[in-house]
Amino acid sequence: MTKPLWMLPPGCEILLGPAEAADSITVALLDAVEPEHAPRARNASEQLLFHHLYETLIIVNCLDKVQPGLAESWRREERGRCWTFELREDARFWDGTPVTAHDVARSWERAADESMTLNAGIDSYSAAGIDSLAVGGDRVLNVYFKHMHRKVPRALSASAFAVAKPSWASRWPLGSGPYRIVTSERRFAGIAKRTITVHPAYGAERPVVRFLETSMYDARDLLEGGIDVMITTDPAVIEYATSRPQFTTVPLPWDRAYVLLSTSRVEKLRWGGKLGTISPDLSERLARDAVRGDARGYRPPSWWDDLHNECYELSAAVSDFPPVPEGPYSLSDLRRILYDSNDPIARDLAERIVALAATDPTVSPEARAIAFAVPGLGSDAPGVIAEGVTEGELLSSLLNGSDFAYIISIPRRPPDPCAEARKLISSAQWLANLGDDFSKALIPLVDTRLHVIAASGKIGLIADWYGNILLVNVMPQGR
Image (cartoon, rainbow, N blue to C red):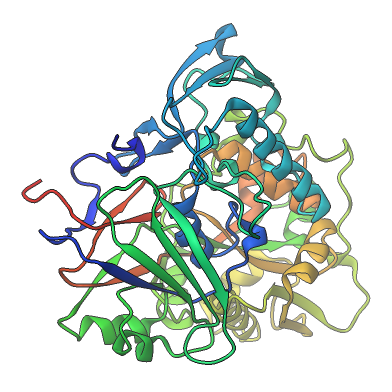
């Protein structure tokens, strides 16, 4: 039986496949991949791999329509406070055991426990406003929410709600997706740090796929070495692939927004002060001149606009009195704009903003705009530096606003804007209880997107609403 995950509508193909099936496909993973993270991805490479291995109850196709995933049907009860999902009868883990409602509930509960263990802020379960779960049989799961939902809650299509079951035979948890892991080997020589081989899970006409974790090598060399599929933001690699007729390069949806969060700005908002923001022209200049990757100036509207009128309990994970951030009141000679040291785009933006802020505002309109948007950021307030730190250090500082400002990336198309806002506020608790000013606390800088590079005529690709891609071996021609 053809799985619903593969039945995306016409128009969802981003690359037509061959008329005849390829025997094998090799995919490069340019970030580190860890089995312990599955099925909840933490980077683009994990997202690409895990999307082939694990399923969610529902999916959102490229036309922004909700479709069946693990659940074949759903219905609203109790005026939308409860949604009942019925799982597909043919849903199976790789070992052949049925996927039950108990498996779904346990998988979500494990994810919530892991979030608390990692001190990752509010878990996705709570951020989505889920109150409780009730199993109504092997194939029926009742999901109770704290508030009513007129339409099926899209939060359940997020990768945070992918379903997996622990395996006693492997570090990789069992999934029910279209592919299953056959081998996963660490290497200490050659181009691959790890090779993950996957086979079609249900005998579908799809190729054997080798995912090669190759984060330490020049991606252009990989393309010449037999790689069939790659996802990247590197403009040099994209330009190189575009110049080669054997490859097709396809841009994916604009999926990330980089924003500046300033503790001094939030403090002034709480006192009713007037603040500016950066202009569309400056945003375009940042995208063009500062970012080494496919970027554009921020384009409104955004999901964080008017959330106060749309969402309940945005600050539910924070006490009634959010912490006063330390950043604006630091007595240190240096005030830091922090970013994740593994994020080159955040680094580029932070360094450019520091450079612009040091310019004389009487001769630079960009410097004036930045100084008006971020109190204390200007040539008359020296000592501001850009500094890259580890993810853990960034999260620790961000939680209570221990530093002056932060450059972070957030989803451009989150499944549930309210859930995304709750997660952000739980990670930066000094943003809590801002009411209508929450959207003003975020200074959007640029939008970015990934590109997929694929061997022409060898593989087909389909994409969902969020830009997740799925490999298909044979694409119906003429669709």
